[in-house]
Amino acid sequence: MAQEDFQYKLKVYIDSTVDKSAKTRQGALDGLKTAMATKILYEFISERRMTITDSIERCLKKGKGVEQCAAASLACLLCIQLGSGIESEEVFKTLKPIFKTILNDGAANIQARQACATSLGLCTLVAEDDIMDVYATMECFESLFTHSYVREDGSRPSVNPQTTQLHTNALLSWALLLTICTGSHIRAIVQKHLAKLPRLLENDDVNMRIAAGETIALLFELIRDVDPEFDYDDWEQLCEQLNALATDCNKHRAKTDKRKQRSVFRDVLKAVEEGDFQSETIRFATERMVIDSWVKKRTYDAFREFVGSGMNYHLQANEFIRDVFELGPPMLIDSAALKAMKSSRLERHLYNAAAFKARTKARNKFRDKRVDVGEF
Image 1 (spheres, one colour):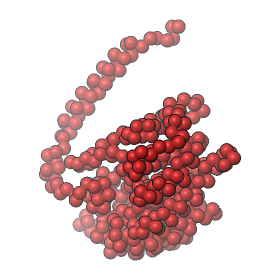
Image 2 (cartoon, one colour):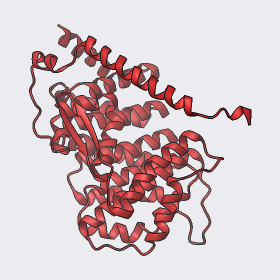
Image 3 (tube, helix red, strand yellow):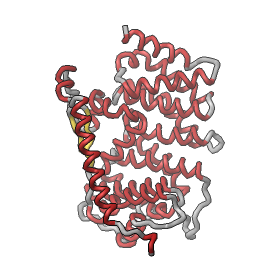
Image 4 (cartoon, rainbow, N blue to C red):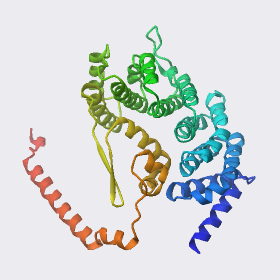
């Protein structure tokens, strides 16, 4: 009954995406997004994929700002649900020209362009079947973010914050597609862009600086895989620049921005200097996945941006995402076994209480040692 009720609700959402009311359409798109992000709905969606695609197309063409953003996100989730194959290729073939039209239209809503820049990147990764078309899409992204490059005369272009965010999204999508490029194309990209990308590290926007830093680290990782003897002419200057950002103390920057920036650029500096990566372990159900490269990190971050809190569930049950991260077929664990593996509420409470007590003791010990600077 619960399953039937849920499917009925999804059908209502699909029907409501063509409603006259913009508010109703928006609610329907958000409802479908939440469902696709938190559940595996392959069979239900596969039968209705072209209906949903038509709705997305209509919302992208006729909707305004927020509605277009929701439709672009839904397109990505639809491709993630369908996986890499003929079904998602059909969907993408319909939506790709619309994404590119909005992206290249300077008069279009800026939030819609930002959303299309992100969605086009992930949909291309999932559903594009021709590598030459991937390269063409990458050139589309290049035509955007290169507007933030420092000019040949050394002057910096004047770009407003919203357009800078568009360029940042385009750069991140371009970096995502780098992960599936051939070795020869990586060489050509390095030749064309590696000397110019470091100038984006001087950008006033913290998100652009971080995106540029992570893209540089990714490029170094990819080119060293292709050519272990790769030598970059301005290596020392780049390391100095990265080190300055990793230890940034500028007072005119917000504390949260500085903290976020330092953390990222310490890892970027390690990648450029030593070819090292700070690995991270993702735990889901009874499994774990180690993110041990910039390629894996960029891919994981791209999927997580759309799936959000449902990422662990998709890692556990979505065959396509498991295939991307080489996790093998989904593991089948019955509810009794899963319950036995979980700690009881009392055990968790006792553990948290002990941890809290230890933390309080450590802090009190530290406080006793501090000098009362008010007396001096």
